[in-house]
Image 1: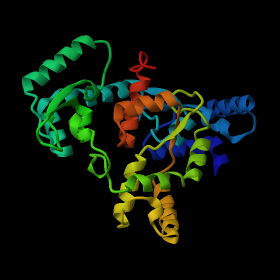
Image 2: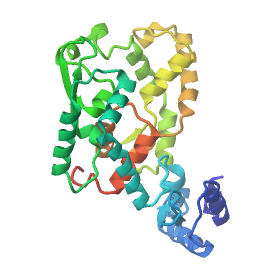
Image 3: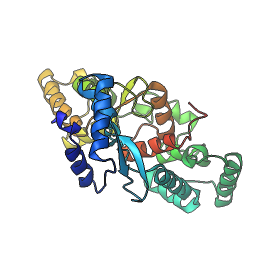
Length: 315
């Protein structure tokens, strides 16, 4: 199947199946394939770097260059032009200007009680925009609001919108608690999570190979494999769907039973698809912005923001 990706007609039909058109002619495509083959040798990986000119799937007016690797292999799928990517980023950012929208989002997420008034919120928005006029920024990471600690119900907590959305609404006193009294205690799930993580080596190897051992965003050598859908969320859903009892340590399970659920988890985990190669600084920045409960939509947004030059001063 792999060798077929150097066939123009197959590429054309594949792109067409995604309601998109390829602008590159067969002659242009074949010449590009030949050039990359000579440059990289006969190994199949050269196909990932073959450039194609396609029409934007969103506006259907602008055409832009991408590579077969970016279009097909990478899960964020680069299929829209830079203008549409910028427009999408602006629209996603603008909605967080609305006080009622933010309060409802937080209420649906963790039901935290917010004490920041609409006037205080609007002043924070204006002050931030005044100091950041030259770039589109994620307001959820830069606008701070106050609410009541979810644990004690007494102390005031001041954090950014993103922290409230993730349910991290704990005062310093409650955050110091450890073990079963900790806000992060999950009844032993941490031990089982690490056990499962140690048994996905095939997934890691395949992810590295399909990513050509390069960061999918910068093209630099990769440093880690990123889950497009958070590993911890995959584990939680697996345990819930299979009604697995949570024990304090992974070695508390009988050996045969642990082997059984480990094999089941590998198949369940693989159903979410391969990961993407990222350099360490890109990976660190991503999780700083989006925390640890992630999905492909967030990664799409992040790659668009990077492409628009938003992080030039950061990286």
